[in-house]
Picture 1 (cartoon, helix red, strand yellow):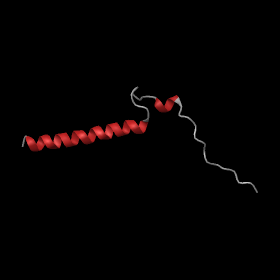
Picture 2: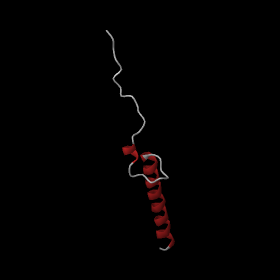
Picture 3: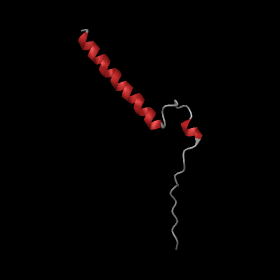
Picture 4: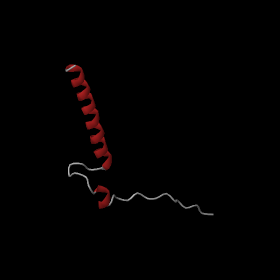
Length: 54
């Protein structure tokens, strides 16, 4: 009895997967990292400003 491998083989990403990305960002995880990083920086900045101007 022969068992076949049924896992999908990875193929290069199609153009649809990159649709909507700015030209300087290569992948969606990189885009998400930039967005989350920017959010964290803004939260820290506003928190510091809140304490400075209190």
